[in-house]
Image (tube, rainbow, N blue to C red; front, side, top):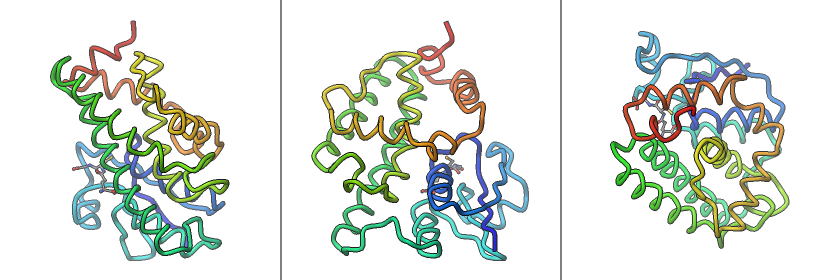
Length: 219
Ligand SMILES: N[C@@H](CCC(=O)N[C@@H](CS)C(=O)NCC(=O)O)C(=O)O
């Protein structure tokens, strides 16, 4: 049965599953919705009103990490460490990654420069916590795992922001920087967003009321 992802075009949480599906060569359908005006059927299948939702037959799985683990289990071989401690650590750092998604989003939407700087610093400080945990070239070593798919969307957005206005987000974090570059060079990551993602992301920021609209404005 072909899985169906319910998505929003800019959502980093959905992108995690897209990367994983591509890594595993699994065929899937994707349906995009407008989160500002979600269709009636979406409210019935998403208890929290959030994407991603993965439809499997009549069932709806929600929460990006849970969806990734499900997709990993039903499409062997697994891309999660088998050692229980290592797996638990990966899960913990994946949750941490979700917090960083929110931190990045809040930074872009900061009401003013001061708040932007504070959130930028908080994001940098949090990224620094990862530095000693990355084995390299991927998080756990030579193999691309779920946790790599979980972080790639953060780095993709960071790179775009960096191109539009230098933030030196990864400066002084050589392992995080190398990890980010390695992920961004990967085809499954590059192909995990819609063709005009960069323009749409920038437009989304420009239309937001935050300080980011000013900072990342097209000069
Ligand atoms: N913890 C959730 C977070 C998902 C999430 O926040 N998705 C955003 C879009 S990127 C959303 O649907 N927001 C709609 C809302 O909060 O009402 C996950 O990991 O799947």
